[in-house]
Image (cartoon, rainbow, N blue to C red; front, side, top):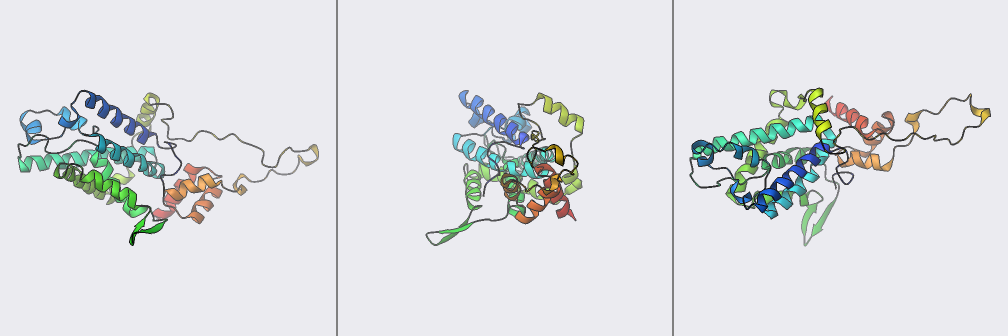
Length: 288
């Protein structure tokens, strides 16, 4: 199992988030401050260091957490390809904000004066993503190691467990808050799963973003599938584009998102081998 085609193809929001998180972690790490960005009761309610709410959502506190965190963020780009960059941006905002609110609420209840009680990093987004990962991504391979059953999803779970236990209770609490946020998103609280950013907002950020930060796929050059047309066959109607056999790469992309192979192929035929259009067809079929 993989996250589809390698790289950040059709996942510009994930690309921006991963790069931002990595750069901020390295920057604060050079300054020796990455381990001091965790949230505590004193920081929020006594010293009013509100800026920590933002930095703690992006910066990992250690190199091992950075490695496992970025690996999981990179893998979960499959969900952006599945629901689209606009809705995935809403998912990031919802899960990150709600997880942060839960953490602050917990700090206010515990009133623990321990410094850096909660570790920093995008735990809300990462562990919220495990909800659709568990429910929507099918197991494609099973195997045994020393008599223990594993699947291709096991490595993602093991990476998540490592990240969850990396700082013991300092990381467990943000992780649990992320799982709660992901569960509420899944339950479609306040219709959040249908929410989208206004198109002019998405367009604005698209212009400011890094190269390839676009939700649309690059245009595919058209080609004549029947070769050169002779003068004697000009009057014959051109073959329908929908009869073109879908490419294996396109089918593999949809299968990696959790769709059935036959359903993916049929959707690609109807969408004329357009992966984005085929994804919409499959999602609409699932909603009925």
